[in-house]
Amino acid sequence: MASITLPWLDSPKDFPTTGQALLEPAGLLAASDHLTVDWLLQSYPRGIFPWYSPGEPVLWWSTNPRAVLYVEEFKLHRSLLKAIRKQAADPSREIRLNHAFEATIRACAGHPRAGQQGTWITEHIIQAYLDLHRLGHAHSIEHWHNGALVGGLYCVAFGRMVFGESMFARETDASKVAFAYFVSWLKRQNVRIIDCQQATHHLLSLGARLLERKVFEEEMAHSISMSALNWEPCTLAWTNDPT
Image 1 (cartoon, helix red, strand yellow):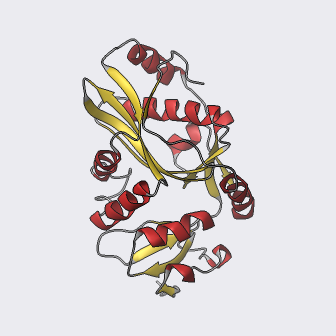
Image 2 (tube, helix red, strand yellow; image 1 turned 180 degrees about the horizontal axis):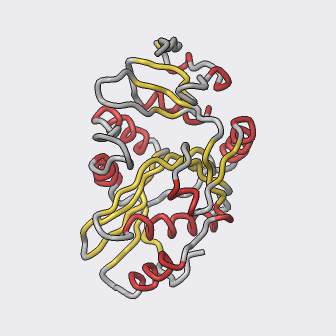
């Protein structure tokens, strides 16, 4: 296999343009020794995200095409709607926003992505995103049952641009229900698009589609330029059909 030459970054201000990302591995852009909140503040508004395994340098990506979900195109399948209606009738369940960010990201770290050995959410990543949360740019959507956190997801946001990160479930459909309510909440906040980074069968089944990098970056820039959402901790109202 041919060796890969990547730009090695010493500063978060040194990110190359996304058009320099490799075709193989698709979207790999650069590497660095460090991952702190300063790197995340510089990377996300450029459409660049970190993804690497323990023991590797920090790898930075700009995938092309980019998987996105337009909130108006979200597909609420019959099976998920059935689960929502059942859980909405249970007074011991709640969908909360930003009540337990650290618990959520640590739970996601314990649930590796499909096909991946171990987690990519290392302690360094957790600490960087905790700092990003304290600055108001990382958020959790949580599914609670009898006072216990049973599912949810976390994301990054700048302006009205939302970057989906990872999700977990300790009960059947717990994260899917939380995501459906999150999409409904975003729609009411005039959010247009969620970045999904990479296409999966599950995301495509929910209505996600692929955008060329240039189109994605145009959409992203427009959404970032809009006024920021109100991410104050709250409990989302249950409804039988969150669309």
